[in-house]
Amino acid sequence: MTVVIIVVVLALVVLATLTVVIRRRRSSPALVSAPRAAMPEVLVSEVAERPQLVDEVPVLEQRLGASRSIFDRVRSMVGAGAVSDDQLDVVEEVLLRSDVGVATTTALLESLRENGAPEGVAHAVRAALLSSFAPERAVSTVADPGRVPVWLFVGVNGVGKTTTIGKLAQRHIDEGRSVVLAAGDTFRAAASEQLQQWADRTGADIVRAAEGADPGSVVHDALGRAAARGADIVLADTAGRRANSTNLLDELSKIRRVADRDPGQVVETFMVLDATTGQNALSQAREFQAAANVTGIVLTKLDGTARGGIVVAIERELGIPVKFVGVGEGVADLIVFEPHAFVDSLLDA
Ligand SMILES: Nc1nc2c(ncn2[C@@H]2O[C@H](COP(=O)(O)OP(=O)(O)OP(=O)(O)O)[C@@H](O)[C@H]2O)c(=O)[nH]1
Ligand SMILES: [Mg+2]
Image 1 (cartoon, rainbow, N blue to C red):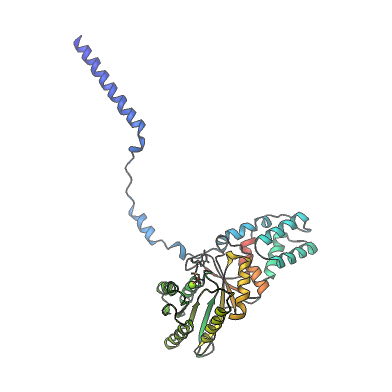
Image 2 (cartoon, rainbow, N blue to C red; image 1 turned 90 degrees about the horizontal axis):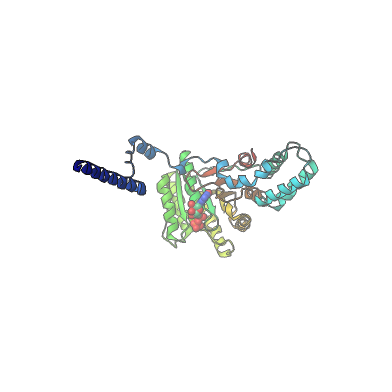
């Protein structure tokens, strides 16, 4: 009898202990985690060897995501021939939202009303946009014999001048040219510091001076250095200045004169514009145009929230060709502007 009681008591104790253990396990599952598998070595080395994302060649269609989505409703229009009033309304709204401007929109709507769209609305819009672009957009890297070609960069604060110079330095070096950077933005010490970083990164030579130095003399020294070393091109940065200040525009003209004096020769003056500022970019360009003798536009920040139609408005209303577009902050994120590829990236299905 005693033995039976002992066995029963023992059985009860074992049962109670088991119940407690099971309950604890259920109530605190987070405390018990499976041991982590060790990181395989090959994965680590793959990560280390993978090229940085910023250095990858950008795909225009992907980078212009926001601009492309504005054209969604035009791309999806079906049918050909006469264009209905509803379709015309959609085209008008899309074009205005895309920043192509009123002039281009009006002209295109008139043409659609008169001629219809024999090959579909998207095709007609594509053709109209293409016809708005300047026929000529060659970029010059060649000066007269014995002179050093200079590319001068102008534009208001923060549009992307220094970054564009860095990207272009890399491009020239990749194409076998030796480059001297002129840190002509002497307004703030950080400006020439920023250009120095691009010089270090790309292997370009650089001439810089202390904050407050005369930008003309920096450009002059850079030309001297480039001539002495037989460099192929000088890329000259300038301060981002307020376009409505005559004084500052005068100074820009002065820098330009220095850069164009033997041994230098300005073969391109790039007005850098921020695409995200839309129609504002147009008024900036107008003010700089006269002072700086602009030969081409670099339109930056076409990635992100920009609306790509601004390229069309700039060319049509200013008559200055867009020569490069910036589509990101990385060194490879600068594309030689090509109208067909651009329009295709907006309107191809
Ligand atoms: N997303 C994007 N950012 C850009 C692009 N180009 C330049 N940026 C960024 O814009 C900011 C301003 O660029 P900067 O090159 O310093 O502009 P800046 O014209 O030299 O400016 P200031 O020296 O102040 O006159 C930086 O953060 C750049 O990384 C571009 O194409 N896309
Ligand atoms: Mg700068």
